[in-house]
Length: 544
Image (spheres, rainbow, N blue to C red):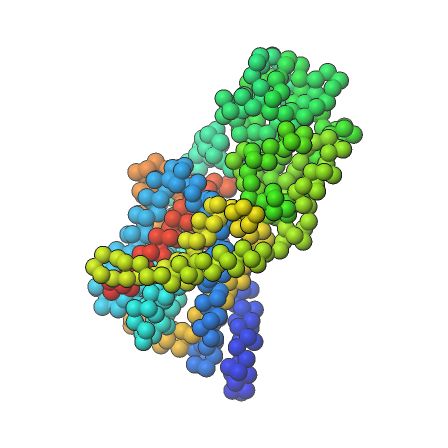
């Protein structure tokens, strides 16, 4: 009965591709005890299709294309976070990520020696235990170059067997750490908020200034007292004006301030008291407007470079990127697709709107020139052979090359008139689409081998080894981060999720803490952990 359907799918690979994606993606949204597989479920549907019949294998170009798009989009979006993590606590964060990934590599090599695995299975074991799809792709690329006749299904099979425990093992490690150290998450959140690191939602308040600030301008006050706030309107007597950087506050002034609750409390303590009467009710002279950033002239530039208070007499009070409100600090670079909240004179707002572009369509489009050129440079870098000690040559491949180039371009933001960044919505869509192509492609090609291995003694040993690596690596990373480095547990949980490169674990950490602090730890180590896995998994293959 299945023969006609199998023949139909085998003769129409595009139909097979999108059927696997359509069946796999909704399955990944099903939650079991607070965790879900997400888009990784496409892999398991692909494995089922491949196991059904060997002819149901998608062409190689499908997973290669998906891989290149996925890692390039990831690199562009992570570039600045990666550089920022190197500048702020960079040695600590990168060191923790490299330690944990290195430990996973060492344990994978130990498993290889004990179980008699070959290099390809060891690489798949490592990628599955650390739930790293880019590492799996890098292993397959290295294996393809080092041993052209070798079966590429072996690392996929090992990855597929070990992947499911990649989420459960981390959760168990977190529960063990909870039982051992009993962290005070509420106290940590308060201390981090006082330090301005709590990533709290932005709010606004009106402050009545109770004493003259003398010769100090607002810009000098913000810089000298390290306030992370933005000043908006200022009422002095009957006069309403913009709280520009060069304004000097006087006793009796009413001024609006935007920032986190902790920062607003610091400003109120220094300037005066919270005012009872708001000054933003009258919008006849000054008004707020939400504007889309779609102009190439604006995208990729910092708020300081735009110099809007002096050039146009307006100020940006918030930046909405995706689902998050960001404070428009001077060093913040605007990206295509950002929505900025601009405060200024009513007569100036049309000019400002034109300057930013304010086109939803333009803010959603992909610049094919910069996207294609950047991806081509990444693929070219991935082809180039790189020497390693011992006379071994490796390459970054279709995973590492685009990732490295994307990290560089994502950090630069723009080159002249060329904007490298993708709009936020386009970036999310491309990452999802690319990963779906990759998982469907490798799943269908490895289905037969997966079924045979999973039912064998070797499959059970691989699963046990992967579970041990996941649990031991996660618990060791938590111990080093929280007990030795004295990192708050809220941040440490996010860091372990980032080291595991596992959004499901991040979701679990967010549920446990009840705040957004783990997201900061996740972003701080994710790029370093991804790069470390990409490079070290190639060593597992090359020296296997």
